Length: 96
Image (tube, rainbow, N blue to C red; front, side, top):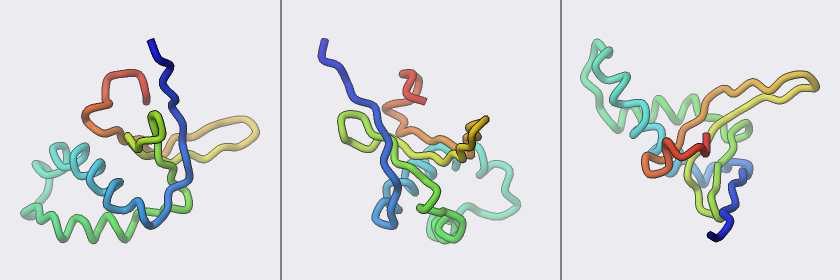
């Protein structure tokens, strides 16, 4: 069996479409039923763009291919994971 390489890299503005697609797939089914308005992809994309901070985000890669993204803050005594999203094809495989 070939060893797979799981890694991260800093996110950039150029990753926006990728992170939005992962976020949309993971979050819409949970949030949409609770909204007091109709979900509109374009509006939600702009809301997401206003809060997404690539400077603190990381892209998760498997064999150099992006499979998810997340953010964490690391100090001397703790790691706090702010969020973690994986592409649906890579969920449940222990990558999180």
